[in-house]
Image (cartoon, rainbow, N blue to C red; front, top):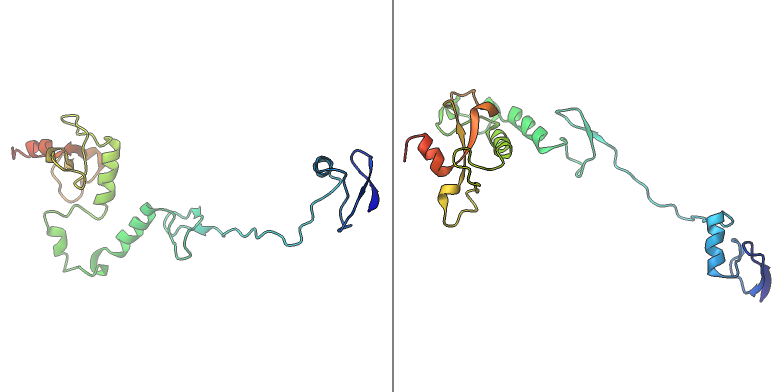
Length: 181
């Protein structure tokens, strides 16, 4: 046993020391105080791996973002949809047949899904005629009249998919607007 003097409380004590690289304390309490006072500094033999991913720039909006996959090119789903719309429009689309697909009665434009969801969120998924909370097609079990629909106030002519021209309705109110009930 060797004799030592505690650098914190100056008490003399005996202790067998295996490592002489750091200060020797009489108790764990003095050791914590010694670290707090800066008498003993922690030495790191193997430094931590502090690797941070570099930021990428979005190909559409030019904003920087932290990516989750190395192949990720866009900062958000919205930017991806804008790029996909450009890439799949016209003759680039594998289903393109001389523009005849645009003449189908159910086609509402390339951004229809995004615009429709924004209208639903604006109206809080509530029918604007009867005030009932609407449900999606997947969630209905018994009451099919509450299925959510997006209605064009002025008939769709190929360009008027603006939020001002769209309104959220339930299925029964949508059918009433088109005089089918």
